[in-house]
Length: 178
Image 1 (cartoon, rainbow, N blue to C red):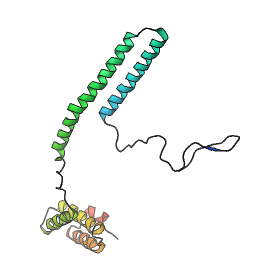
Image 2: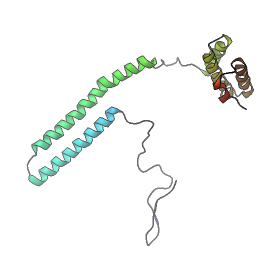
Image 3: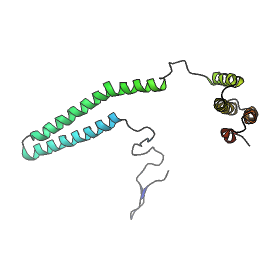
Image 4: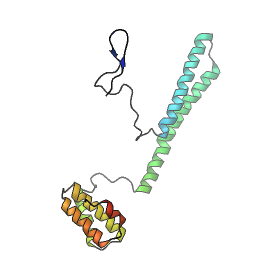
C-alpha cells in the first residue's frame, strides 16, 4: 500500500496509517445499494438540508419559516412512506416473483453434494442423452474429476471419449488438457 506523505520544510508527516484499512469506507460495486436505500438516501439528505436551512432561518430571523418546516415534514413523511412501501410491498413481491421464476431457495439440508452430482452425471452419461446435454454433462464431470478427485487422467479419458463420440462438438476443444 502506498502512503501519502506531506513534504514540508521540516520532516515529512504521514497522513495515512501504514498497515490499517482504508480511511474512507469502500464501495463494493458487485453489491450496489437497492432502490429503497437510494430513494431513502436522497430523501434523507434533502430532509437534513431542509432542517439545517430551517434552523439557520430561525436563528437569523427569530421566526419559524413555515414553508421550510412544511418542506422538512413532507420530506420526512416521504422518507418514511417509501421505506415502508419497499419493506412491506415491493421487497416481498420481488422475492415472490424471483422465487417463482428461479424455483426458489432450496430448503436447508437439501443441497446436493459433489458425490451425488458425480453419480448423477455418470448415470446420465451411461444412458444415451441428447448430444448437447451429454457434452455439457461430460465437461462438468471432467471438471469434477480434475478439481475434486484430482484425477486428470480420468478427466482426459472422458473428454477423449466424448470427442470421439461427438467429433463436431466445438465445446470440447476448449476443455482438452493438451
